[in-house]
Length: 310
Image 1: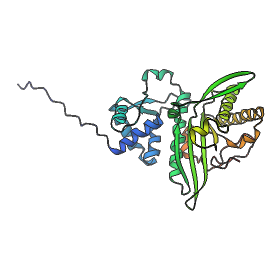
Image 2: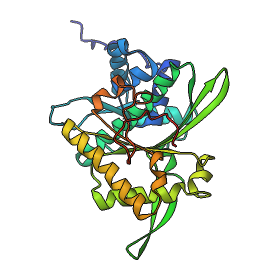
Image 3: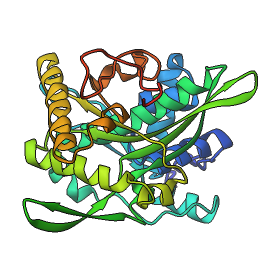
Image 4: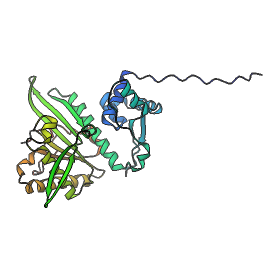
């Protein structure tokens, strides 16, 4: 009688290839990505099944951590990926990238739908910017900086409102620098200070947010020291399930901003602001950079994001 134990087949070691290194590096930069985000950035929209398989294998091997997007009214069960323990170790020890954070799964119960929507909206705008610019003959995206990196050196501004002084940290969600060329020569630069609005800041809180950005970008202030330019377009993007909500929120942000500009005697600064609203799932299908879908706070006429702030 044969009593020898049946041997389990040896499992193949998980090999990190150059394309997979790019996936890990992309998730390192954006921090939270869904399958379609990785697909749009590094593959093609037709490769969704292939990318989903790659991400699943990385999650199974602990290079990534996977969790479901908190349910919305539509019952969305989209999965979000962030770095896992092996992914952090690989990026730090093999690629030499700084990895000074890690996702704590036990905090998922506090990771609500609003925060998840914010993180994914930020990822998608940045991915959409890179994908769009790569197809343009006369536009380049030459620099992208994200809040996770900017948080290491936050800028501080001092505000006085109704006789009360306070100091606030200013950490933009992102900063993007587009350059438009003509005949191979630089024609115009478009530095965009991006803020993803979750609709959580009501009138006074939102107005304080706008005041802090005005103080941040004032001549000779922290903005020019951080980004090397005084030019700026301040863009607020809001998302939401219902079109009525998105439209009303966009109008409210425009109104609140004009109140701040009037109170500060800076109405002439209105053209540097842009506001728009989108459904999270439609960001990739809408041309949010060239199309006239953004509103300045003082005008009912939509304009492109990348148009001169004048």
